[in-house]
Length: 369
Image (cartoon, rainbow, N blue to C red; front, side, top):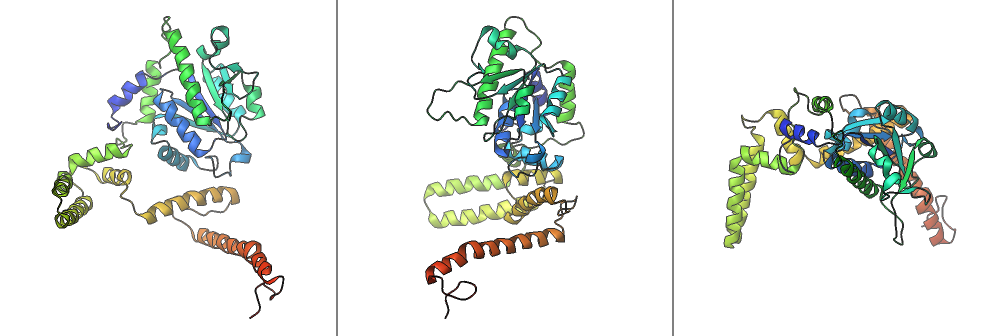
């Protein structure tokens, strides 16, 4: 929604959250992890565990090679800030994750698999008893699925029945289906008088303190929220926009262009001057979510993330702790560019030239002139 993330909203959301349900993603791609996080947060789940094994840490498709701060920023951006309201933990092995879950009281590790021998998700009776325990739902990557170790640690294996021709279900869609069905089954048990489905008062207070510390400023988590706040604080800019709309409706092309220039000038003036009722930090946040950042800054941010992944894989410092790109990084990028040019020439241009000349030419394979 477009409402600001106030402490009252957070407390209301925590009261409706489900206890005893956690989500685990093993070696998942960034987009799938973000989609699963959005679904989990919207459905009232608090705990998300990410597992990246050593062979996947250097992969740029997942979050394994990123430090905590970088991973949090990426997850927040891709999940539309859903992970800002989740307790996210990362593990280096599925065994470490399983141990942490057991220590937290989860007594049913449920692996989602496409195998025929697994329990159908929509089963009832004794076959659905696992859904009423403290359950951790395990999801793997789309390419490889859950690892053999994860399957061996699972207490229950469930499958989503599929009747289509492709038999191919995106893991994020699978997680949404499984979560919705598990919560439906647990809601049926709540109707029988089970009062333990929600978070305890102590757990609500703990999560509130962690997700929204008292000293932290309230964050604007989507463009609608940011624009609404900006509209309240910058009436002149939006009055100019309203005037432009009215001018456009009159059909005067010249008047429309003049009004657009006035609108742009007003917007620049408003954005350059920080109103007294909003702090510099809030203004930076508003600018970010409205998209008032230059293309150069966005590309530099993407380059920093890529360099950090390379930094983790080659063991050479490429980005400083204060986000400055070091000279070694530029040298590394230049070497990679030269290597790419050399490979393109050797593998593409030279064979093509030899093909055109029938094998005749100079030592580089190019026609003699």
